[in-house]
Length: 384
Image (cartoon, rainbow, N blue to C red; front, top):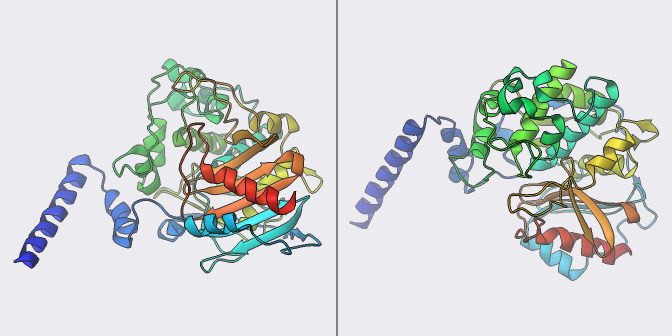
């Protein structure tokens, strides 16, 4: 009897899911369900990149990281060991003065294992904007989006500039939610047409007035880059960043069904290569004696935009696609991705911390996550 009830309930559930998908017109939900719920997940995860189309990010001549004299001599504090176990870390890397001082991998990962960056990709896209300005493809961050994309030539949308996108103050009607299976973020991640989803958004708030974190902002920046350079962002990143920065191997960028890179997320690479963006910014836009972006752009990127947030409070935690905080008397800026992917930079210590893994800690009222400070505490205890 119980088996019959269970069977009927399962059938009704399947019918209901299909009805929701049919009525919503969101056929991409089938892919989302097959990749997540049917594999035991309720959201995206660091290994799901294998289920998406990808474009290639080409490496050039590898520039190996130096190892410090005391490489891996210092062990993890017990509190940090517990945190890594709790949050199911797969990689933890500490680089000081351009040399790896400590690295550890778990759950079958190594220094060459591939993992999804999630929103850490946003910092790379912002960096490509800086490169395009230096190359003359873009005049400045104050150039209007409508100069590149016809969908932004009229109405209030015509007032949106590249800077508004970089500072997440575009005023477009987007809702950022990683656990709503019917939401815009889910459609961007699992759907098949990023241009249709993002370029047709409406302007609901005057640009530059309010900070609201929007993955659509980064996606639109990628379309600006394509229009300006006449290259895909994977091609431009290969040319301007991945190759010159000496990445250890090719990376990939997940795409929609039309070959458009998911710019708001989804660069698939390893901890050592993700760390290279930290070295670039700690050295004010120069990588191994090659200037890639102007120091003025770096300064703007890693300092607060000081635009009020939706609660009317001054936003001191975000620059140009980098998060910013001050902790234990130190300035800190960092790339952050879903589930606690981090490249954390501490300029006063010339230190980079990379953490990759399956889970993150709770978000605090200040917009940062608790584990950010715990990783900082652990690294500072180990080496300072």
